[in-house]
Every structure is written in C-alpha cells, then in structure tokens.
Amino acid sequence: MIANWNVILPLLFFLVLIFLIGFWSNKKIRESHSFIQDYFLGGRQLGGFVLAMTMMATYGSASSFIGGPGVAYTKGLGWVLLSMAQLAAGYFVLMVLGKKFAIIARKYKAVTLIDFLKHRYQSNTVVILAAISIIVFLFSAMAAQWVGGARLIESLTGLSYTAALFIFAVSVLCYVIIGGFRAVALTDAVQGSVMFIGTIVLLIATIIAGGGISAIMHDLMAENPALLTPFGAERDLTPLYVSSFWILVGVGLVGLPQMSVRAMSYKDAKSMHRAIIIGTIVVGTIMLGMHLIGVLARPVIPGIEVGDLVMPTLALKVLPPFLAGVVLAAPMAAIMSTVDSLLILVGSAVVKDIYLNYIKPEASEKQVRKVSFWVTSIIGAAVVLFALSPPDLLIWLNLFSFGGLESVFIWPVVFGLYWSGGNKYGAVSSMVAGMGAFILFDRFYPNPFGMHTVVTSIAISLCMYVAASLLTAKKCGRCDMLNV
Image (cartoon, rainbow, N blue to C red):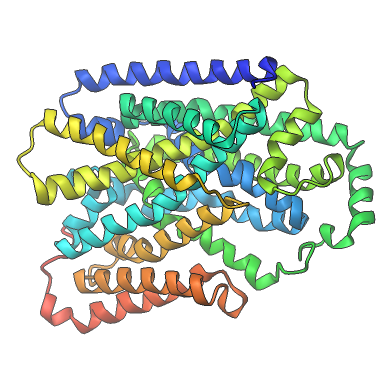
C-alpha cells in the first residue's frame, strides 16, 4: 500500500517532466532528415552544459547514488578516498579522445563507437566482437540500474520489489523509445542538476541530524576507529587496491562506449572545453558528497543490513517528507539517466552495427525506426527478468560492466586514434585477450596481486595489441591506417 504522498508527489512531478521532454524530442526526430543521426546521436548538436551533464548523469548511476553510499556506510572514509578517482572522469574522456575523435567520427559519419572501429580497422571481426562485448557487459550494468530504481521505489511506496521494478522499467522504456538520444541528453541535463542540488541538501541535513561533524566523527571513532582510516573498517582497502581504481573509474573510462559516444556528439570545441570545466566541478561535488553521506549516515541510521537501502532510508529520516521526495529524485535521476543511455547504446549496437551492416543494409528509415523501437523494448524486458533476483549490493554489477568494457575497448580506441601502426590483428587480439582475461580473473582469481582485476586485464590487452600489430605489420601494410 502506498503510504507517503508527500514524498511520492515530487517524484511523480519529475517523471511527468521527463515524459514531456521525451515527447518534445520525438517531435524533433519526426522532423529530422536522418532518423539514425538524431535518434542515436542527437544530431551532434550538444552544447557545453548539456554535454557535461549528460556525461556526468550517464556516469553517475545507481552505483554512485545508492550502491556507493552503501559501501561507504560499511567501509568508512577509505571508500570516500577511493571514490575520488572519479573526479577526472569527464576530463579524461574529452581530453584523450578530444577533437580528433569528433573530427574522425564526422568524417566517417560514425554514429556509434563501433562505426568508428569498423572504419578504422576495416574488419568484420572487430565489429562483431565489439557488438557482443557491449551487449554482454552493458546487460549487467543495466540490470544494476533496474535493481536500483526498483529498490528506491520499493522503499518509498511500500510496494513489493517486483511491482516497483515493473513501474520503473515501464517509465524508462516509454520515454527512451519515444525520444531517443536527444531526449536522453536533455533529460540528463535536468537530472544532473537535480543530482547536484540533492547531494548538497542531503549532505547538510545528515550533518545536522548527526549533531555536527565533530559528534559524528566521535561516534564513528567509538564504534570502530578503522572507519576513519584510509584502509576501511576491515582494513582491506590497501594502497595498491585503492590506486588501481584510478584505472577502473578514472583513466579507463576512455574505453567505455557509453562515455566515448558523448565525445562524438558535441557541437564545437568551445562546447567541449566548457563541458570539461562544468563536468569536473559537478562530478567532484556529487561523488565526494554522496560517498561522504554514506559514512556520516552510520551513526544517524545504525544497523542497516542491505547497503542499497542506506540512501532512501536516510533521506526519509533526516528530511521533511516533501523535501525528501525532491532529494530522492536525485538517485532516481541518476538511475534513469544511466539506464536510458545504456538502452540507446545497446540498441544502436544491435540495430546500427548488426542489423544494418549484416542483416538488411538496404533497410528504409521507416524499417530502421520500427526495428529500433522493438529492439529497445525487448532488451528492456530481458533486463527486467534478470533483475528479478537482485544482489545485495548492485555496485558490484556496475563495476563488473566497467572493467569488462574497458578491457575490451580502451586500446583499440586509443591506439586507433594515435598510432598509425595499430591494425585489425592488434585490435582483435586485444579485444579477445581483454575480455577473456577479465572474465577469468573475475571468476577465478579476483584482485590479483592486490589490485582490481581490470588492471591486469588492461595490461594483457595492451601487450596483445602492440605485439599482434607489430608482428603483422608487413602483412597488413598500410591498408587500415588513418588518413587524417
């Protein structure tokens, strides 16, 4: 039974606003001369503020607003330190890929990351491996967002988890199918603003509810002094492990397809530079604020057993109901903005990179539109089924997805841009080795040598790319080198 309308009404208002943006974007798509360019890339017309917010909102997901604070609640200030590796997320993506990626993407008329890889390496194997990787690893990332959205609605309304999951899934699917990338980018701007404000409000309210920083720190010290150290409550956050997160959620983000596609979509260089500044400020505020909230919440709401419930439980305790609803629109915004971007990305991999390349290259725009809508719907329904049995902490699903995608894509993308000697043999070897190494290490030998699994996998994929490219240099010649 739904219990607290003062909390729910702000969320309903937020959802109505999102749907209005979706319908407006759908009108733009119908007026567009290119459904593919507009639906999957927003017509490459994103300004600096929208670009910064869509990158941040895509990256700042359920793991940042629900899973991250939940882990910080358990481990202490050490997890806050680890989380700050995310500070330079937008900077790394836009500066490493930068103008060169946007120029080449326009030259190739690339709508997806796989379009770029296809033209760069002239290899069907690269295309198929990339599409499979995106579908496999982003499936787990989308499942994490579905779980996070459902748990949030469950905690606010008193509905069962299954009913909450259904409501969330239908809401997201409807506006993504209606509005495409343009709707995703514009709603991300709204959602990013909500996240920023919500983080600051909840942080202040938590400090007040705990009696001030000094009182909270005293309580944490009395409970377990290790909560206040960089090493975590169980002293398992070693310097090497924490440092390895600078690869996973810092430099390695260049290899995430959902991030790199944003570097194709901005309007001009001025927009890119403005996005770097705005994005760094917003990401820093949100990531520090949300993870710090998780630690400070421990004395305020002791005894939380499921970490993903820390954020909604805390908001309902320390804020008036209506304001709690406004603040809880922040994690809802984070979840929706990430899952809509992932849906568009997986849909583009199936429709643009598989259907149009290998199944029906002569498909009309009307047929592409129809297939896009059906693919998005089917993928969404499949993720819902997977999310019916959620893990206790959804952040691990998200980090698995991040590590897998980075292991597969980082070197084919970076060397594809900056090393003319890289070729299709290097790309295929790197992708296969990266994917295989990450899955095997994650399943059988996680955190080798005390580092996150992704570091070893990226190192192996790097060696394979360079070795295979050099060994096949004469065979490949200059057939697939960049002419820019």
